[in-house]
Picture 1 (cartoon, rainbow over the protein chains, first blue to last red):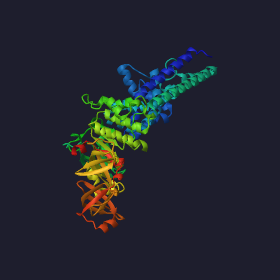
Picture 2 (picture 1 turned 60 degrees about the horizontal axis):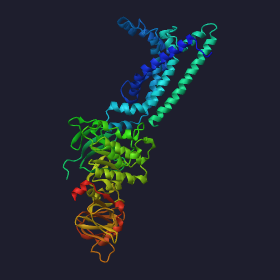
Picture 3 (picture 1 turned 60 degrees about the vertical axis):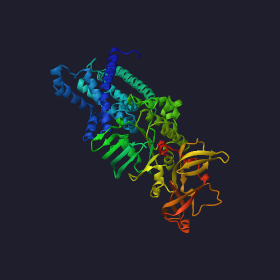
Picture 4 (picture 1 turned 90 degrees about the vertical axis):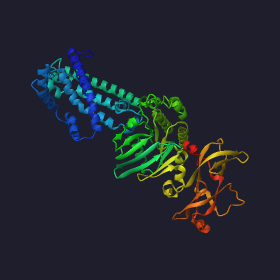
Length: 230
Length: 374
């Protein structure tokens, strides 16, 4: 019970890899999008907002299928990528990361956007009057002050990516060692006779993983909040 | 006197239904923007600092054009080099006091380091606070750090927007003396926003009165305070003339000081100042009484002969009389006395001022402008 089987190790490792990649690529884009939504006024803003939040409200299968027809080898973008660079992300772990990232993106943007809206613009004005150009104000004032929000966004997105199922299985299928993440492995076990014991082990692993992540993030955000002087 | 004005503003800015339409220029030293809340003081300072943009007009500080709509000049806030001390101090919560103080120094031109770190923190008495976080500081300490932070960015002008607003009543005097020290020891013009007349009289050389978005008057504090037509704005209770004077000598027997202004002598309770020091004395209108003849056998030490230049009666019992005794002086008497004495503009009268009525709070150390002017 205490030792993990190679299959379980593989699923956990793959899940962590996929979720980390997804969050890593979401982060810069997420901060930028959150910034635009929080600070900029332009026509079509509500359309962008709706578009960002789409993965939250449509069935994950829809996103997975859209990804498949776009990035599959016969898809518009995927076909071009394959013919030009011989790259394809469909049915690979990279594709799983893309699917997880897209599903997690709105959660991350929401958290960061809220923290940007909570920043006292007066502090940024003060920095400007002290001679700091806009990019320096962002790096030294805004970014440190929204760090707790970024952290929350990262954790939410990571958790969402770990649990991603619908879009992943539609887009990259359920290939052992390549795209069979923890939820997919669990699903597979429930589909075979005598899979209950293995499935239960994965359930316990998933719960423990989630708990560790939550406790660690709580400690981390307390520390960051102290740093920021809140 | 200084030749080029330190601040010269001619701007229009519509903010909702409020129209800010201000035109004045002020010389060096400390210029106070005085007015009620909602008169446009902070909006004007934000235009100066570049945090807001005028619809039209021009802004010049120390000869440099910061904004000019006709030639399309609009220097961004971070290039204006105006130190801004906000009402609410706005220290960066995630940085120590030291980091706050040093924030602007990297952007100051390398050749321009007039304000020295050690000198400023000593002047402001914040040496022991350097490693603290802003959220552990009191209101007065925060504001002193904010002043230091603004100064260490090596600004060409210091903007202070009601710096006492978030300071405990007991600590206000402390900050005022710091501002006084800055004005006298650092060679930097200051714009000081306030709605408290006692602060303005104590600190300012020049004052600009704002009302409903316009600058209704701008000039030396003595001149503005002696204008009876500005009374409704400068405050009836506060009515009084401001006189620039120098300490001449002290009378140790009776613990009095002799002050000189124009060719007159004013006796006040003993001051702890050296002879030769310039200061500004506020003589409240209610402490001045009038007589047709030179009073005999009176307890009053200060008797000045002068001419009535203006009489303003209010709709109640009082009248204010503007006198010329070499400098303007304001007397406040009842309308009944005015009628009984039959006073008219141009009449010669004797004005009597009680020495005991002039207390420490009526005095401010005069800035450089006054010193040069004497």
